[in-house]
Amino acid sequence: MLSKQEMEGLARKAVAALVGVLLTVALLSALLIAGLVLLLWAATAGLSPLVGQAGALAISGGLCFLLLGLFFWRLLSARATSGSDGEPGLSLRDRLENTIRENPLEAALGAFALGIFGQADARFRAMVLQSGMAFMRQAKADSRSGGQEDSAANDETGEGEPMGGEP
Image (cartoon, rainbow, N blue to C red; front, side, top):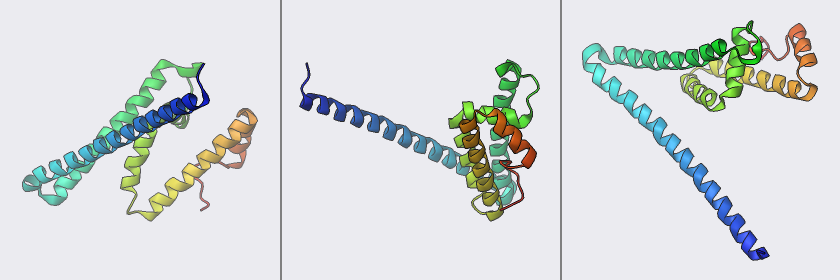
């Protein structure tokens, strides 16, 4: 049998190992993102003599949005063809919500990319924050009531819709 001190020591080691793994993942993710940013800067610098600074930035930005669009298109089309949940008539919004719920890491990376895009635009940032809060309220209400009754009420009143007009 292990003594109390040995159990505490094992618990400390387990917590330290978990913190180390999480820190490693965070640092490697930061290195990956920094590497992608540096790669984008290098592409812009390489294209600048050929098409000018504005053209190089436009090509680099277009390439980023193309890759992001292809990534999410593939995620959405894979869900549509697999026939998840046995519901063939899901709208694009429902498929997107299911994709975000099932792939939170990819959704966070997409949100990060949109956050970089929206840093300079206060209206875009306000719209993203407002829609995020609406989705969180709707998910919270759905989890409390089982989802069926509350989502029908939200559809009628317009509450919880991400593109609402109220600030």
